Length: 318
Ligand code: CP
Image (cartoon, rainbow, N blue to C red):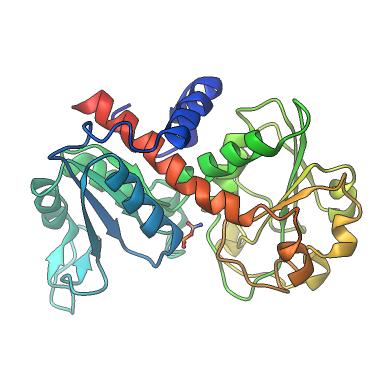
């Protein structure tokens, strides 16, 4: 594996889960692997979990870790070619990226969808520039269309908690006041499509995800119907993908909030969310605080997910 931008690059899932289990059981066993190697984490957007869990993963592997918040203290970066740089942006990403590559052995990048140009977002222009110009192994810490380290952590969590070989997993849209990217739901769908689980996506009309991510999932616009018999309920908001509505909030229908009444339709399902979550918009207090809520185990598995991926990148590239 040269770079990591999608859960599909994990290869065989059984092997990936076994590798994750080894990391979880002995987190410091590979300290020599990262000795004298520097991990640079570049954030174009805010983060709590990804920032901390990926740093922890690098430290567990014996790496030196540098974190760069592009919008705090670095020069303001231009990302488009051909722009006359007479505004407030002092440096071009095409110089900044190879310079960053000089100072490290591996780069993690967080760069969300900007909702300015759907084509640029879905072609992952920023992430691909890091891959092309840094000269170093690059991994995504959430890009415009995917959040693979989150998805891998979610899949590890489902693997740990599932009570049947083929659980019913329902990913449901839930309301949110701001336009959020499709990266988490796209990526979760991509990951679940690698399994033989019964996978259902529930969202209001107008919120269907890109077909290449939906894959073989069943899609319904009826949340109650989807939740019947679910073993896992994965809640997430996303903005519209289709046509001119790309990146827009079409409604904030709170009848889609995951509540105790909604969870009563399920097979005593576990509740999942990647966090951060807006309580009583996405999920009610009682559901997220219930013993069946897996939000903290998911967050804990972010270290396992990142460490498993960084370990593989170190093994395959150095
Ligand atoms: N789930 C997740 O990626 O959280 P952060 O945005 O806080 O990193």
